[in-house]
Image (cartoon, rainbow, N blue to C red; front, top):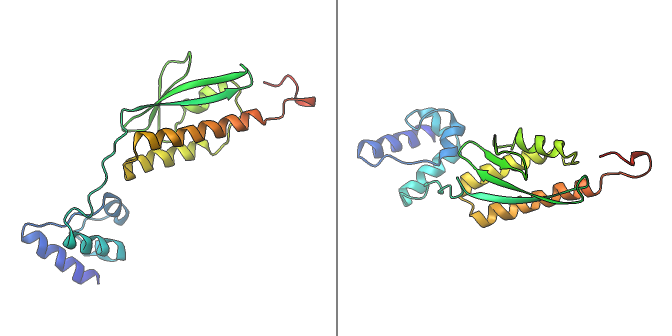
Length: 178
């Protein structure tokens, strides 16, 4: 299969119709489509066949939310109300700005800024929150999520943080713990 697919690829390329593959396929294969090893998996072959049927079949979706700003509300027991953070999606991750904090740049996992802001206000938050922000960043890039879909996901993450904070034990032995 790999040899035949490679021959077909090279034939198309030589005729001026070089096949295009999804970006993630090329990244996952760790070699170029000109290398016969590239086609030693079914997914690149499927991409090749899809390209033959429709030259735009493997076009990656446009990342539509780089530079867009979102809001996230997080409840803090320390202050007894919701704080609103401004979050901007950047080409390398996120920028986050709290009420009084200056904007800081974060990676795709929203580190270190989100964690520092939450810990500064003694907010109890899910330890996996950073993985979810990374997942959201990647999905927005790979699937071309709309601003509304990214905002809805951020709303869910803000609600999750707030529920964690609201349900942290702060009575009895833990009274006075911020």
